[in-house]
Image (cartoon, rainbow, N blue to C red; front, side):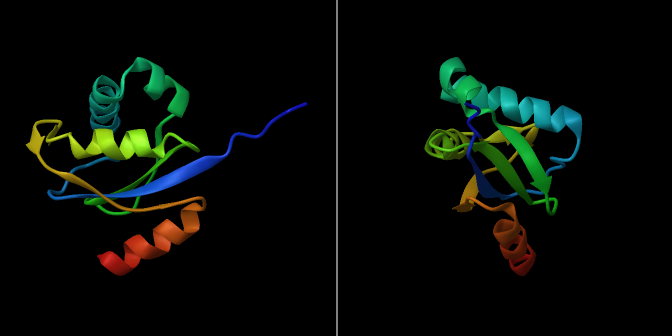
Length: 107
């Protein structure tokens, strides 16, 4: 029997413009999240950046049940790729299209 992993999407806003589309910034962000979440929670979450909607907004994708760990970890991140910033969770959803629509209204 093949089970499908159910995912959750989290819309995150940065206080400063950061380039989450670049691979270097994404890697450093994921390393910071891993340090805070712990290796076990990070590896079981299958965290990835699903979409960068703006220089201040991005959508992270993870397995269902792990979004609370990600939200807590992202609240403690104060610097990404040398840029002082704060991350705020706007909304979580099971569908990415809802979050894309919301992020476009927030610009």
